[in-house]
Picture (cartoon, rainbow, N blue to C red):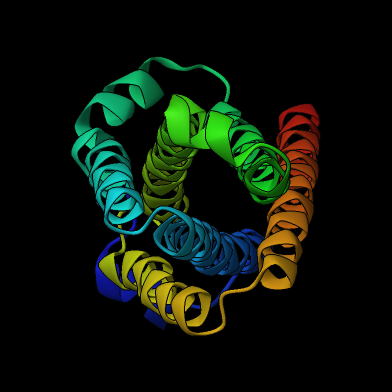
Length: 220
């Protein structure tokens, strides 16, 4: 693999520039994913606290705990699964799908609170909150493992590239918490899907060009 210093100091090739673009896209996606997760959790926590008082606060705290366990403590298992996958971007695709489902389920909660508060109080609200936490946690875990692996593989284990990828998550958390709103939540989700599509397409085109160059060199 490439040495840490040699990757940044040597003359850049087209492949290096393409890899830098992919690292940039995955870093933007990290900002978006972490922002969406924290935005969604705290939006729902506010709704539950206002609607159910102390009971709602307990439900929210439990859901946040479930989210954190799945999002972070499950990553070793997610990493083992990633190593067994032949296709490069299944985790990214699965992450985007799970986050979409989480936002869809979260969007059901405000109207259900207005239409049938008794049903939400009797247990449906609790299970919906837990479901959202599970979907967000799993989607977050899938994304972090995929993104870390891409940063390492694309740059030959260059730690600075991994640092760039990791750093944007903290900014996403801050923006998602401070600016949380339903409009922001939906905007982040649309951006996540768009960046995922661009990433997969860009990586596919890059690999197609690489195979073409190899074929030309073999023929020569």
